[in-house]
Image (tube, rainbow, N blue to C red):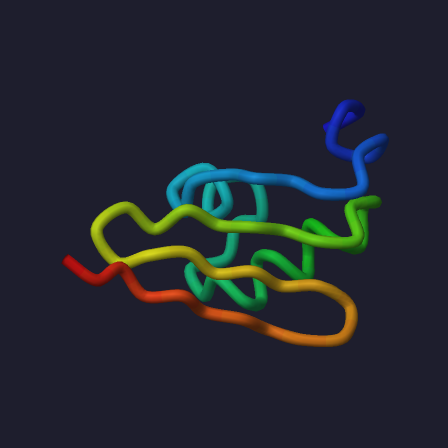
Length: 65
């Protein structure tokens, strides 16, 4: 958690995000992590794409074959 508090952008997979934040909802979990320091959280969702949350917006990029 000390390292997370010192970064501006955190790239993490969805399972780690849920484990750290104790939230099942990825957006709520990302916002909870952002309260600890990062200005942006990017959650890698494997075969589903990525989710980026920052203070101003939420962006989802689905994976396309």
